[in-house]
Every structure is written in C-alpha cells, then in structure tokens.
Image (spheres, rainbow, N blue to C red):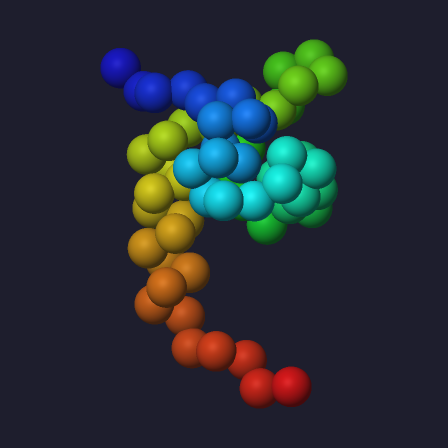
Length: 61
C-alpha cells in the first residue's frame, strides 16, 4: 500500500517551505496529485524523483 504524504510532510521531508512544495507541484517539477484544493504525494514517487534528480548532470549558467 502506498504511503501518501501531505504538503506539510513533504516539505519537512525535503527541507523546503510548504509554499515551495505547492509551487513545484503546480509546475510539475515534483510528482504530485491534486485532490480538490490540496496536493498529495506518494512517498515512493518522491524518493524515485530524488534519485533521478541526483543522477542528472548539473546545468551550466
């Protein structure tokens, strides 16, 4: 059974502000599902997203 996390839980897990988590979810930068007016996150999808982001080469400015 998947572990579903709230915005507050994801913010604490990623050490980000809740507003930043909502912004990233709305922009599609982080895997999320919108249910009504709130965002929900699958912990397994978040962990996979973190692993994939860590593998990507850094962009030069």
